[in-house]
Length: 122
Image (cartoon, rainbow, N blue to C red; front, side):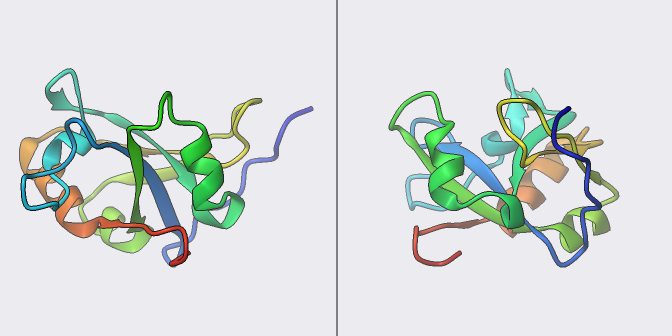
């Protein structure tokens, strides 16, 4: 039957897999590539809804061990005019998407709003 779709609240947090090979600046901060696909703004950014997944679970879905997890709160994402909605899949009941990302400026702002997780801080 599948996972029921839940409302995503402004107070919720999202988990984004970040590649250590391209999503970080030399100083360790997250860069705008974390929200792009093939060099262009990703119009449907895949994330996990943090209240339905742990950092460890989100990290376990990465294709290899070259990933970390970024955390971003929903409210400031919506304040950018983006839509956040839960879109569970059979493999990932916490799967959520951020829709409407269509500019490099938005990618930069999303990167600025995202902080790097440690397994202990969520």
